[in-house]
Length: 445
Image 1 (cartoon, rainbow, N blue to C red):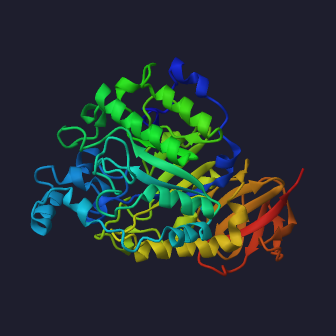
Image 2: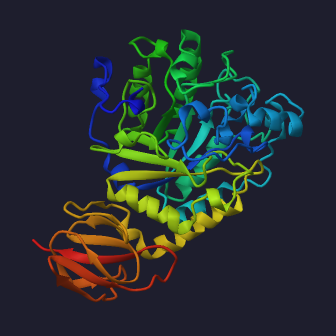
Image 3: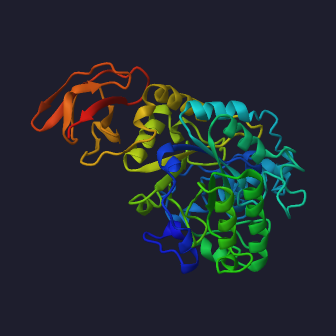
């Protein structure tokens, strides 16, 4: 699929959908991903590392993604399989759907936190690889959250809360995998292409789901994952091209990611450390969890999580290179945000209250050189350069010509600065909230 190719080319059928990515998506910079499902009941995975840092042959058997629990427990000899046997008596996976209560789920409160943290769009899972739909999806019978478990349309609740808070709303849908619809063996290697459903029956099933999501929720972001069944890629009444026609007619300024197979995309994606080749020219988005997992993993501790300053640094690194960040949270089965995740977002919110002007609506600053020692990243808003610095005291900045006398904090407080040896040395004040300090300077010319 496009996400795994460095220079993908659209097939002729899909070239008519190519266009400039809408400005809102290029300006928003920061969104929140939500992985929540029956896997949030066992909430267990080995915290082996970030995607892209673990050897592929080790990944599946020791998968750190708790949302992959239904697959990992089927791999003979995996620690997850042994955990499942010891703790849950090797119970059928769907028992977790019935034990998923959402009893403390307050979408308005969660979205308020996301908004304070500066997120401008929200993308919850609507159906992950376990095939459980978070709305009354056609063809799912009672295997969805309206009829079992929470007994609520969770997609609608997320959509209503996000839009009431002024956020854009998106839908994640796993088109490439569905472990319930199919009877394929577990994924044990890194080649998902040989282990995914590709037939017409699954294409019809998945197409009906996506068409229903478009009709009901008008998502601003149509976020697919893994692939799309091969039977649905050519032209025809159940072609993915028909879904795109429906989508852009319903949401003209909507955006589509690059995980729907080699079809069409408005932006490229990377995930943790994988897919860096997508972080180049054009519009792109990095997604990752606050920890090593997307779904809630009770095994993780602070050593596996970003804290507030760490999340801010990652956000600014992505934004300074022209990307968006989709930062994931994984609520527990009751719908509560685990403390380490909440603490991270609260830290981002505190930082954003003072410094959001260095993030939203910015572009990369051409001619500036990022540094890791001291940590410095740059963004730009029109004639203003934003230097984001994780240091205090004199710091020499490598950036294009600026007026040193204009150095100031985002609230206008003057900051001492001078030109020395072709660089600008700024007396960076101590941070008033944890995280890097932003110094604004007017560009010359």
